[in-house]
Image 1 (cartoon, helix red, strand yellow):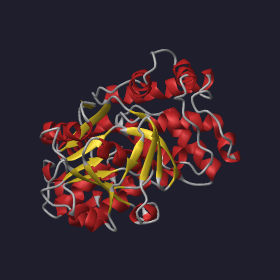
Image 2 (cartoon, one colour):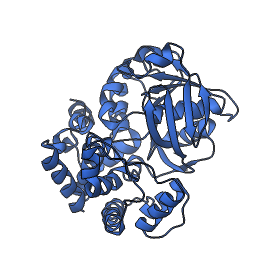
Image 3 (cartoon, one colour):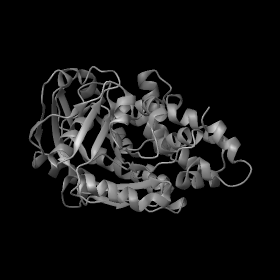
Image 4 (cartoon, helix red, strand yellow):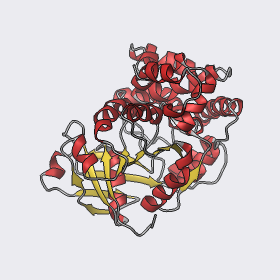
Length: 379
């Protein structure tokens, strides 16, 4: 696939990451289209306003706007999901009837084996397409209003894999054609699941700064990754790395993550964040307790890590404690809120079946349990 060819990319989502991706794609000569499932976030763009990007990317852009999921699928060959994890299942359900063999799918960033869920939906229709899962987002930032993207950083490296894994080279070529040479192939969907460091990092940051969030304060995130918060992030990382090792997977460390994402020298996690703050790249922490740091990353990130730890017989005690503490704080059962895991019902599958499906999809599951596993996983 030529990196110089303009591609039509439908973006499901219209938040800060979706806006940042749309601006970056158009900057690189591609033709993005945004779809807001609610319609609210693209209303002004649909009426003719420009999308203004500031920060690591500056300019005015005019992405196409889709009124519904069917239009997004029909008018684009590449579909990129760029919305919080709690919206993935509903968007996948809306898109799946319109996806055909000509499509290629990217999930930015991947959550809770969502690629496997979408693969199962398509397998029921006899459709198989490459589904590329990203371990994190291409950009970071905020959305001050519905015509503006504050792009804090554009990552230099993003871990990816493709389901089925036989399409990995095609998935890599697609990502390179869209965003350049920024991608690192990882060893399957479980490795990508364990490559997303946002849930563990946001857990520590939110626990250490919850009163700032609840009071709506303006505060520097990097500056407030103090030595004790940084130490917690490092210990959470050791749990994640231990699970990956038990599953025979290789994933980057938290130190590599901050170094590659934010371009600071490797040191302690607190010191790296202080350097980000000194460079003006530390970011602003959430100004509300109703933040994706909790409402997305706890049920769709921490719970997934806890599940993988249980499957690998490597309990994620700190991650589990985080889910319990946030559930107590918010008066919610975050263990029960993950719609993707609830739909997949992985308890009906063995660890070997989960590993195999994560690489090859439901349609290739071996032995006579395959049909039962797919049926139970999509109930």
